[in-house]
Length: 95
Image (tube, rainbow, N blue to C red; front, side, top):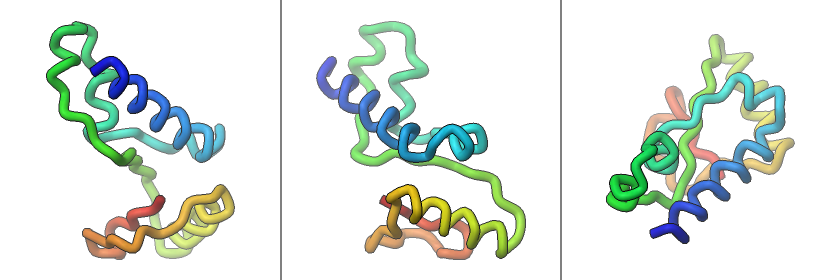
């Protein structure tokens, strides 16, 4: 389990680095990848189910700002996922 926790930390750090300091200030990491980082008890942390993705929320108002965010994410190496699970009007899965 320690190896899985280390992998989750690496995933979070990789996404944080890719977002860069400006976007990172606007972002909130959520979801299963962050769960173990919130648990201080090592035994309890071992029971956490790990995920294969990193979920990030960025607050954006207006379609123009949404498009600017998508453009900035693409410039930083992110791309739209082919597995769209939510309406693109509310969320845009990116890899």
